[in-house]
Length: 409
Image (cartoon, rainbow, N blue to C red; front, top):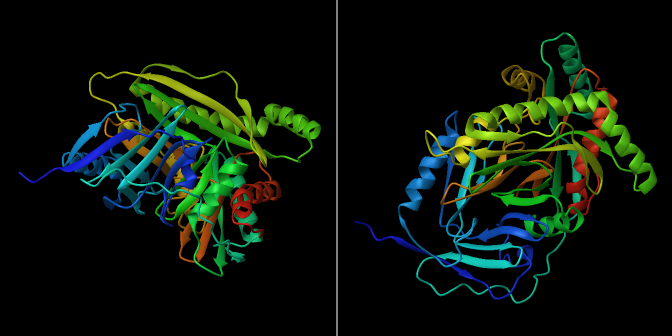
């Protein structure tokens, strides 16, 4: 029998800022409001593709767990070995799975560290590393702004012709830096500016998503649905009026309804009961406001054990990132978008040894490759959409990453 790898989790006596302990430029991160998980080093990694990628990911994770001897003195969700995951939007593209060598976690008044191997507890950074900020030049992505507006107009016509109810169209923006791009500075800037989002980094995909696709914790499941967006002005009185108009907007409420319905229908088979609020609330972020609904459910463990992978397989892609009906919307995306999304708009986050975890939708993000970064932004298109307004909304959705990069397009 092969020797098992030692995995140790211990409490930390101090509560360190998670995004300031990362020692290298290949960080793993899932942090919101100072709480969450970060990791570094690679104990094991793989990629999965195809329609069975969620099941294949579970199989690989369980195979890795069999090779571990775990000592966990903390025993809460997120301790012990952790799998960081970043799934592709489309089954044809690669999803990335990483088990880091070192994981540091924080939740409320609990902080802990997990590490692999027989080595002593790893030493954490004594001071915050100063990071260079590159300068960027920007160019169009797969489509120009005019071309993208034309594609939106085609999508609106398809919706008005009753071919589909809703479709989400995304666009990209390409940046070149004058030096290698370090995700840690981006994460710190995003966390400071958008503390209510989940700041993530996995295999070069870095961003701050406001949308929690799935939290599974001790048989309770939560999904935060966002659909319907309006830009903020920075004037509190005007923004309150805009929030009220968003909450009354028939176009945005229709877009939101499709997204909530798709999530609730996907969760229902796993749950003994679900709670779907009658109306959304308005989520205020630094630059935009969204219609938001938190769908919750109590997992039924009969007839089989339900884990994060099980739910992901049914939940992705939701109407919030694809459309309604799903298959027809996906075909429209393939025909009109003119680009490969990669891991943009796919599930991103972490899963623990029990099958619990937190995953968001990879939004407000960019894919880094050395000194190149590709940003993404998408908009939900319904019958009442307007191509010029959708373009403006996409620009607002680029803003968090552009600001975090210290740049503007």
